[in-house]
Image (tube, rainbow, N blue to C red):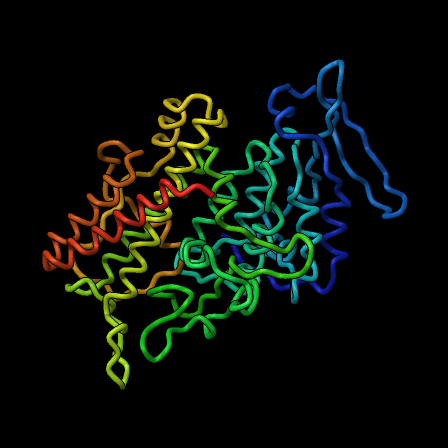
Length: 403
């Protein structure tokens, strides 16, 4: 069972755990050659630590991969210690240590999967129904910042995708935000509470007592920017990671729909004391639906781009693998729910059945769920049509937008 840890008092404990790790090798070359294992221990006298590396490559060149240490592997079975190791602390003071642990061009053997499991344990809810702690939320931000701009080593993507899915609300709400309006890399449940009009900039239907990662926050410190859109784009190269992210978005759609009113509105909406034509009960739901459609469209955009540029060399094989890793279809309850599950439970909700139709037709997948919900709940036809059009516009915009 996973449990969140407290913040470390200094960087020294993490430095002792992971060593002073340098950049090593290029991923593209690493993927093209099998490892010729030759263990070498490099001692950095100035730091007084050991950097475990393995050399690999052809006769003409040698490339170094990072060897995950035994002390790092221990973190897999100690989520509390893993959280402490990845929590960057106040003011992101230990962000450099997190980068040393996670930022590698290539990783030997099963090391990348191990690092992914460390991330999962450090940032995830310890059990169903348990909200994320502030330390876990800050660790999630630090992970995204640590790998920003990195071409991920093979095997790491699924673990990072599970983290993004675990924070499906935060990863969706924070896209495209500007850092000046955000308080820090994470906020407490009190800071995220809806205002008197039932609105919170951190998402809809938030669970009480849960801290939230603020991936849109920007900091002047080097290596402290967590670009969640760029991370999702990088993760989308991997079919298992793609399936995890796609499942999370479709699960999020069902989660939101089953909490809307029978008129497709926000049940927590409170009109302002002075009439305001811009304040409507449908504003929040419209935003939620647009976000899901945008995220699904973006996934399909990445898939098409990678198939074009060769990052996905066999699209049919990629799609088959995604379907194999996908858990199924997510449909909302037939009646309105008022529960407020934690984020980890949103993405991990039970499936309602196997995937129906072409999984890679994102428009078909989300519209089928929306149409079924509208029919089950007796949503007025005009409102249902408006919701569908909003989703269609957002999906198409994301699918064709080149950034």
